[in-house]
Image (cartoon, rainbow, N blue to C red; front, side, top):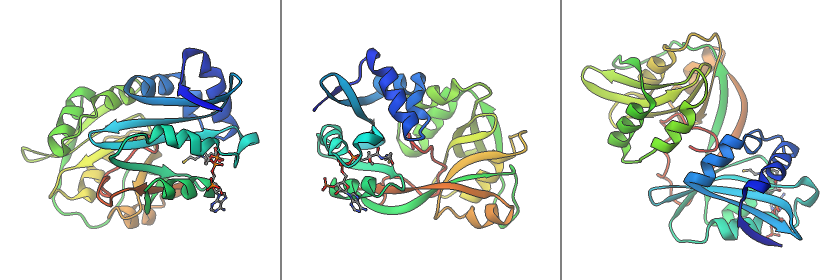
Length: 266
Ligand SMILES: CC(C)(COP(=O)(O)OP(=O)(O)OC[C@H]1O[C@@H](n2cnc3c(N)ncnc32)[C@H](O)[C@@H]1OP(=O)(O)O)[C@@H](O)C(=O)NCCC(=O)NCCS
């Protein structure tokens, strides 16, 4: 078995492995192209047959493991470990969202990551009651404007990811303002809040409420860290937990549990 960068000719095999593991991302050529262009997309192969793949994205000094999938016929055969050896070939901080497959967490712990909190896949109506300090109004802005605002808030250049999310039909960048100050920046599709970063000192419940108020869809999906302070109010408003991954990281403060995060790209 050897590990190499994914090539155009691997797309079908990658999609087949993704679908066999009930994952949609790897079957989306646009997603694979995004990570090939802005991260590293690796395949493990034996005699020319692709048996698994893994992808990482570098966010500043952080290596985010976005994907790790192996042909189900080969689960438990060491392919995941070989891919991780190649994906984490440098020092630096590491982070990922582990699935419920115990092999995933078992491996990630041994690559220096500690389970931190669940990332909940939620679905519900785009409004909720409950306590909120301050107000904040969300406005639709070009994705590049929202990306620049996020960079001001947390120093991370996510413009390539914003451009990727913005290519989804019906999507728009979002800015939540409280007076003149930017309280949050993010991006939404027609029925999905992809990503929302709240400024230090702003109320993440208020910024989430403001962002959700921009939706016209009856039901919305988002991924919320379990410790996010809006979770009790969302569940009171009959939001539903559809799934959960486990956030793991080499340091506890790499991702903030007050942000709305995308499941693979953070
Ligand atoms: C998770 C996955 C990528 C791992 O790849 P893999 O090739 O099956 O994994 P490996 O054989 O390299 O390693 C699995 C490790 O888990 C260990 N393991 C297996 N079951 C375990 C359990 N119940 N508890 C603890 N460890 C366990 C194995 O002993 C092995 O560790 P070792 O190398 O020290 O012996 C693969 O199983 C997969 O595609 N799963 C389904 C999709 C998925 O959930 N992907 C993860 C997305 S975050």
